[in-house]
Length: 269
Image 1: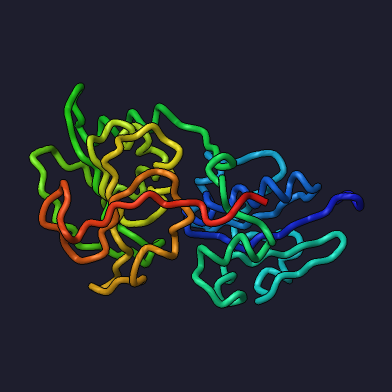
Image 2 (image 1 turned 45 degrees about the horizontal axis):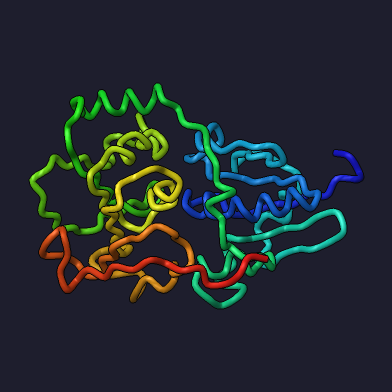
């Protein structure tokens, strides 16, 4: 490693939405002369094929990598040639919600993160998924993702969706065959999208999708992880109808559906 190169080690091996969200932070670091080492959870190592870029060395978390002796430090490390940013534990360091803590940990603003999140689409895999799902030419459908978590801890969030259209659902049996990026065509052609607040939401921010977007609270074993959606009220630009409670009565709206357009909470740095 050249002596004149600065290195930043990032700890955010999962979830995928967090990795997507932090791409602006990576851009800022690269622009300031850093070479980034970014370990990724072994079960997500495939993501590198889609988001690899100059200036970032993605590596399996279980592999050896430079400065690994600092990887599990609780606090950031800032020195002339080396910086360690434990985004994964930013909430505990700054005593706030996980998403609101990540960019302040590095003295940055998240506004406009979408402009820094780019990925390569694999049209062959998207087509294979469409064939696997047996979606006919011109067929109308809605897409549903009721899952949250990272393997092996996957949870299903109850949804009561009423529709006359075919339901295309993300499910566990497809994990080994397809990944979130393979759903790009499905997401762009769905008449409605119903998903728990997961990595799909970050991907949808970058795709040309329907405006009928329904975001469901993260619920584990019947209990919401958050009391409202304020923990992400600065994240999304698209207009989402947010569903906090266990069920909704009608797909087009009820007193359990709150429609809001998330606003930027600060000016860009």
